[in-house]
Structure formats: structure tokens, C-alpha cells
Image (cartoon, rainbow, N blue to C red; front, side, top):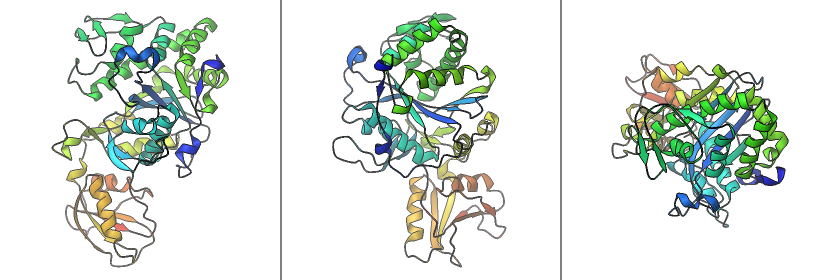
Length: 409
């Protein structure tokens, strides 16, 4: 089986400017569902000219192996795409677009490792979370793993007939395998509101059931063999994960996590049209909740899902910010203001701070704590915002210090 696995060295493509590893015993693994149409996947359509990431998830395995989290990153997330090696001798420019474009940029020449490297670089720069490994699975590998555990029961409320996803199932509980299983997690426009967020819900429901069944089945050497045989034939990983021994270790780590402590989450988000009324297709990450999630994972702290979902989103556009220059360097406030606008905030002014400062600060008037935190957590050097009773009403103030290094996301 070792010979089945495709490995791709990505470290030299990610670069050196990476987040610190705050919990060496924990593992953060990028799981990419690739919708490559190469080889046996060609029957799903040949109209794609670039590699695509159909699904993006980060699997966090805690250092004590007593809990884990699977975090879905909506493919339509509007983020800052990192500058990446295209694999053809050129480097892309950093820009804002939906997150799954990173996979296509890095995979310009058809290299899964390059595609994963650009995706990892983009995720790390937007979240501050260090990714330890990647694992890319294509359509055939996914179907094989589902078949290896004898299928998964799903219970759609309505019949689903989706030619694009190759899916025809009736309403009610039933076990799906192979083509039907793949179609169930891929279908989008034929179910519910047709959004990627709705599809993520079905994917997480399916993955939760797959994890539970695998925990039962993987106690059998024969079942473990079948799963690994299917996986290794359609998977690409980084070299450290490219072997039966590390993959079995990973499977064993997840297998022992109690079902009620393996969480399935989606990055908190809201429709981007709340920031940009003309954008009806994409989503913006909800701050400060999104960064709270990534910071908890970086520190290997178990997540309280309720804290991420019980607070109503505050769109970036609704947060008024002024940028003050405390560096003594001309143009620092204007530069920061451009970063804030790019992040979706409404900049109401720039100016010079009353005194010079080495440290960037965020202050706010009473009643704007959540808005201030949404601004503060996006700083690459994150700070704790401070209330200022004398601050301008309705406005968050970001004072730029000499340590300012831009924003995440």
C-alpha cells in the first residue's frame, strides 16, 4: 500500500513566514476534497480547465487524543489569497477572492502538492493556525472508503434528483454507497436553498456518520485494510503522512476519540452581500467568532460551539473605524485605512495620534465591545481592545504602532 500513495513535498512552496506551533502534540490536517477530472474522474465532466477544491476541512486532533474537531471552510469564503508559486515559473499576486481559488492557482500545472501548498499558505495567513499535514482525496477515493464500511445511512426529507451530482434518491432513510454516496455529499443546487452552506451541513452529517461507522469497523483488521486500500489509491499527502504507518496512527487517533467529543463545525460566517450588496454568491467570515475558533485550535483548547453561534453577526461594513498614525512615519494611517476597507469596514477618517506608540491599539466607546473585538482580532499582532469613555460615539479607533504588520483575512 505504501506504493499506492502519492506524496508531494510542499514545505519549500509554503515559505518560511508561517504561524508558530503553539501545541506541538496536536495535529492540524488540511483535508481537501478534490474534484479533479483526471483519469477515472473524467466521467464527472471535462469542462474544468483548472484543479478545484470541492471541499475544504481542517481536522484538529488534540494532543491528548481525547477530543477532535472537523472545521469546514466554505468554498465561497471571501478571503485574502496568498501570493503563490503557480508551478510554471511565475508567482501570483496576493488578492481577494473566494478561498477555493488558492487550490486552482497552486495547481496551475496539475500538481496537487502545489495546489495544497497555496491553500495552506492562504489558510495560515488568514487564520494564524499552522497546518501540519495535508490530505487530498478525489472522487474515487471517497467512494471507495464509503464502500469499505458498507455504506452510510442518510435520511433526506425530500427526494433528490440531481443530474450534475449523478444522484437519484427518494425521501426517507436509506443506505448509500459508491456513486450515490458521492452524489449525496456533492449535490448543491437541487436541495434546500442551493447554497454551499447547506451542502456543508449535509457533508458534516455524512462525515459524522462515516466517522461513527469507521470507529466500529476499524477494530477489524480486514475492514481497516479495505479502508486503507481504497484511500491510498486516490490520496495525495505530504511526505510525513505518506505511508501506512502514519496513516494507521492517524486513523487510530481519531478512532479513540469519543463520538460526543468529535465536533463538526463551520467557520462562523454571514452573506457577503451584507458588506457588498451586489455580491449574492459569497460569504464573509464572522469576526471575532471566526478568529476565536482558530485561536482555540492553535492553542489546542476544546471549543465551546455555543459561544461561536449564539451571537448575531456584526457585518464588517457596519463597523465604523478611524485609523490614527502613532508611528511618526508619513502614510501609515492611510495604509492601515486601505487594509480596513479591504476587510469590509467603513473607514470614517484618518489622522495622527496624540503621541507616538510602539504598540498598535484598538479603543472604543462603551457599547461597541463586539465591534472593537472584530477589528482587534484581525490584526496579525492581535491585541485586546480597551474601552475609552471619551471616544467618539459609534466609532472604533485603531492607532497604528511601529509593530503594525497588517490584517488577517
